[in-house]
Length: 127
Image (cartoon, rainbow, N blue to C red; front, side, top):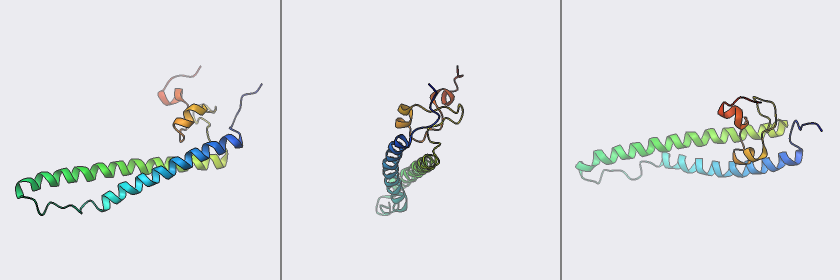
């Protein structure tokens, strides 16, 4: 019996549906983060006492910076999911880029944009 070299069209469709669901959720989260960044100045500190103004401005700046970092991570996640969809269309999805073997389905269900099997990802030697 020969080893599978790629997932079947039915299996790829299953992964595509999983990725599309994750992509929809990721885009909604990204939009929420971006909306928070655009509207971050709505609750200004102009009406608070001068003593707390500096502290509130600092906390507000930290909050915006954290939201910006989260938005950037979410944008990268969306890009990885989109790249996985391209690999599905090309029928190369689920093939480890280090070993050339199929990435286990369990890993792809947990991390659908994975391009490496566990061993290459963690730096373990094969065989």
